[in-house]
Length: 134
Image (tube, rainbow, N blue to C red):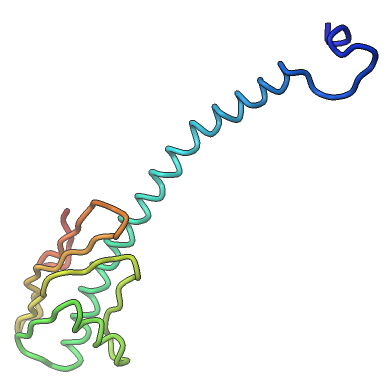
C-alpha cells in the first residue's frame, strides 16, 4: 500500500505518517504540561514554607545568643540581623515576608508573620510554636 503512495521509490514520509507523529507529540504535551505546572507550584509553596521555618529557628538562635528579653522583630530587621553575620534570616528572592514577630522571655514567638511566594497564591502564617498554617 505504501509503495503505491510513494510512486517509483521516492524517499520521504507520507502526509499520514507525519500527521500521526504530530498527534502523538500533541497527546504527550497535553499530559506533561499540567504535571509540570503542578510540580512548579508545589516547589514555590515549599520555598515559602521553608522560609517560615528558617525564620523561626533563626529568631530563636539570635535571641538566645543575645540573651534578649521580649523583643519585636520585623522581617526587615531579621534580614539585617542575618546580613550582619550573626544567626539570622535572609528570605529567598521570590518569597515575600510581611508582619512582625515577638519573642518573650520564655522563647515563645507571637507571630503575625506571613510568608508567600510571589508566583503562588498560598500564604503561610508562622504560629507561636514554630508550626505554620495556611
